[in-house]
Length: 175
Image (cartoon, rainbow, N blue to C red; front, side, top):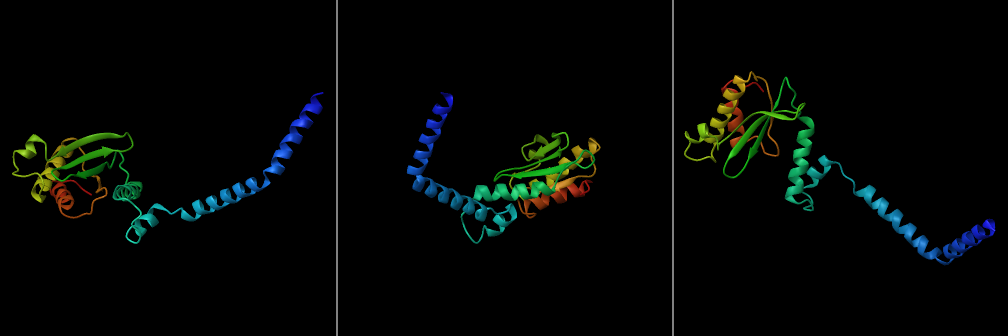
């Protein structure tokens, strides 16, 4: 009895498949075409960054994220040589020294700190960034951190980012 029931079920399935053969073939064609499109459209992160100027399909936020990820893949901080990470907003600049192996911030400084803010008229110029770098270097030397790796993030090494790096170098950090 069980053999007969299974035979009937298999037979019904076979009849359904024969009746819907065209639908299955079309679905299979669509599946193959979409897979090929996905394979063709896969680009590496570097290729996407290079293509950014040619086709404007990448939104600025996606572009900055790709740019940051490619740089972050090459720069890693260790306990012997932590990473100096920089964030620049329109009004202020923030810097912190991070040990990536333990994922902890060792030292942090910004133009919002009281010691830096008292000596400044505005927080958005190169002088403020240089003073922030000098203060960060002094704080890190107190914690016996002398050698670091500079991580500029998605920003160009120019202007306030360069001023912060120069200030940190002038005060004794090595990178």
